[in-house]
Image (cartoon, rainbow, N blue to C red; front, side, top):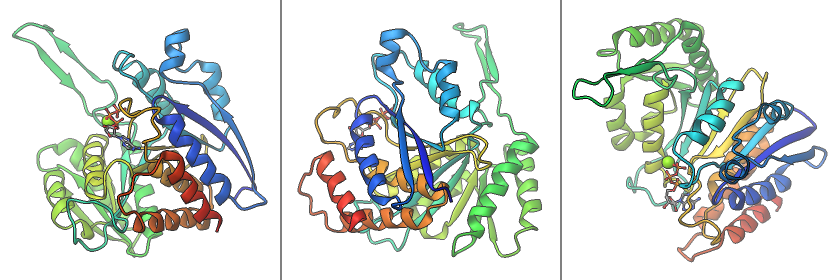
Length: 346
Ligand code: ATP
Ligand code: MG
């Protein structure tokens, strides 16, 4: 546990700066007094691109490397062609810092609107592989734009890549009270990748006798997310399945205003990055309407990642208490941030 925190802050676009400001307020209140917080803001995102044509210059990438962690608001604006900021900034960061774990906790907080009202506890975390699968840009198109077009999108799965994410998921499961890990894939149809995932999973499982394991095809998993979400504790899955499952998970646990995430490199060789799952929400930007809770919960993930689990719990308890007392009265971004800050301090 480090006694200083050198944080990079990328407020980004739309509601990003609004929610990040609240996240930082809560972070300041939550940190132990003897931990010195230093923050450096990076001007990256749509405005920067419009001004200079730059997404993430190598010099800033180098500078980012020197931080303990990164807090990101949101990146993206309809005025920027699709893919420019995703590839030039977000994916560039993910690959440069080898963020092979995409962490998405899903917890049903009290008094939270969920389509599964009346369900018992939902408290699971999806560990999604972040650097392989069908998202590596391998593939191509033949006879593009003709009626005879053929497009391929190759899913890349390496023994190295699968093993490291599976190991990370077993570690996380082993550190939670229920100690249960579910592998989600589709190995009845995607036989080659499925074989690698299942074999790796079974081999690593032998090293974790205390963790109970389960396997589900992804289609079955979507059913259980809705009908029996309480059966899940930790889920490990590939990049594409994880992308879809985590949005479903956010939907059943109160929506995108509450969903936090981490792009994590657990080796500590590079800074990990924490961000709300929602985007820049240009429709409500600048109006003080954005709910900063997802960002505040992302700050909790950041603190847990850096060894301050007690402080993370304090933030989560503050969120839980704040949600329990919500009565539908509209509050501004700032008011919610202040309420959470007061609870964390108090
Ligand atoms: P992106 O492409 O960046 O993921 P998106 O088009 O998926 O963006 P979001 O920015 O996530 O969209 O917003 C989706 C909807 O949810 C919008 O109507 C937005 O206003 C709302 N929304 C998103 N985040 C929040 C928030 N923190 N508080 C309140 N409403 C939000
Ligand atoms: Mg989106």
